[in-house]
Length: 175
Image (cartoon, rainbow, N blue to C red; front, side, top):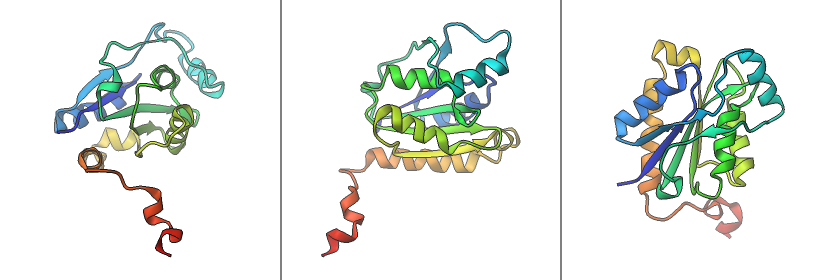
């Protein structure tokens, strides 16, 4: 059985709903990132500035070391087309402990694909899988089948013996 850790930052609770379904359906471990200095005033402006400048605010992480897990799934919102700054802080802080990563981004409407790219840049390796959901999909419940399919695919990818290597699909290897 694979060991999968789901790490979530959710300011509004939308990402937390995704995490709850993921972990409940597969019995995975979940941990919520907290900000050391919670957002009280100028919330929208602070989120925008931190995203645009790619800042890494101080966070509190009271979970297990990610190195103990086969895969870490990150669930985070998109702010101004970028990964939410508290999740950026987590990834940067634990980059040497995260062996394999998947990214689930929650967005208002656009920019979700940027989260996987940003995580890949920080870790210097691409996520094994990534997907995005809109806040509307989460609110109306239509996200659930796709999220559960992702969970099954993630678990299968961890439990597979060996890895699929890029050269297997390369036209140069068929020669």
